Image (cartoon, rainbow, N blue to C red):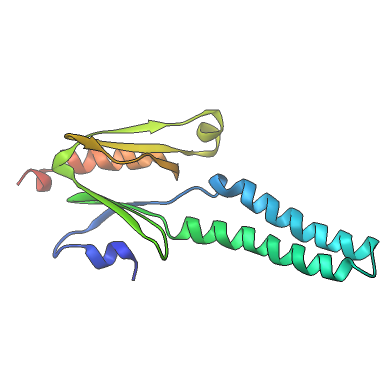
Length: 158
């Protein structure tokens, strides 16, 4: 069970679940693969010290990839029929929740690559404050559309 499921109120339902795009971690994936390929090259060119260099490079490469996957997997952005919940972190956790009645707008910022690869930064603006921008969210326009649907639904007006 994820963090969001553990904090849902009775009768509250998840409307949309957003994730961080893999593109936000492309540099980490590239460095990881580069280290692993470098390990093979080290063994090929230097038979005496190559295996030691290869072991270190392989561990470093897998560390880059695993850290990126954990960071992506432990970031949650969920829209429920009552609020928006954002959570980051695995051991050290940072969470923010905002009731939908306090949401004024949702800003989406996408550069050229964000438009092409369907990711962007999302900022939820509420009465008196706003959430810290959530960087590299996959499908940010879908999140904005779902927020508009929930905000306009009659169930939210009770």
